[in-house]
Image 1 (cartoon, rainbow, N blue to C red):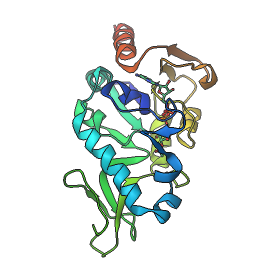
Image 2: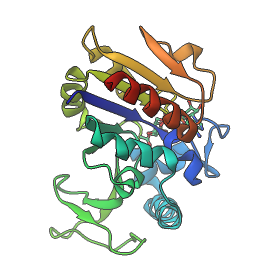
Image 3: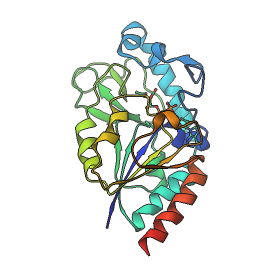
Image 4: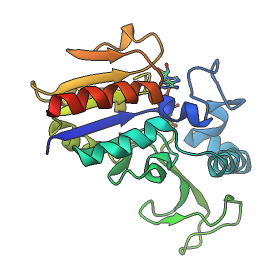
Length: 230
Ligand code: OAD
């Protein structure tokens, strides 16, 4: 089976009802990113940061995977699929995808502020001040904030190196190091990009662009891919 690697971003979940970052005038669900998604924000106001992610988590429990997620899960019938997502939601998993690497963390998990290797599932939707890890320190959202290292990056590079097909979907490719992943494909890797927006600035070599939303774009792409298998 050929290896198909998906690099997804916020646009992947837009049709499920989750707002993207850069389509909302610098605000993210009415918050300035600097107030809620940086280590400095956490130092300044832990309760605001926890509240913001509690809201995101409640929203996530109310939404469903969309057609795009479902078709990507279906690709596992035909390809060896790896998903590298910048999204912190679990919609790829809920759609049935089995290999999902979360570059920017996971909304439904918390981690220790003392030992980053202590990661826990969040029970229910809330993480609050006073919720402690087993070492007695405050738990924080298991999210990679702006200005923090991306621990899963090395693994992601190794996955991209092996891709026969790379699909970039719903990401503005604005945020590094994730955006740099495209540079690691081998020469014969076939590349597709699905995004309804102006993708001219996001051009990388030999990419076939499908200028559609994720759901419709995936309907088109799976037909193309299936035809190529014949
Ligand atoms: P962006 O908000 O930067 O980009 C979203 C992209 O999705 C844009 O190119 C849109 O044109 C496209 N889009 C919008 N609706 C779509 C739809 N229905 N179907 C397909 N595409 C659609 O989001 P990301 O590139 O994911 O990081 O942003 C990267 C990172 O920046 C995020 O992971 C987050 C952040 O702020 C952290 O939280 C660390």
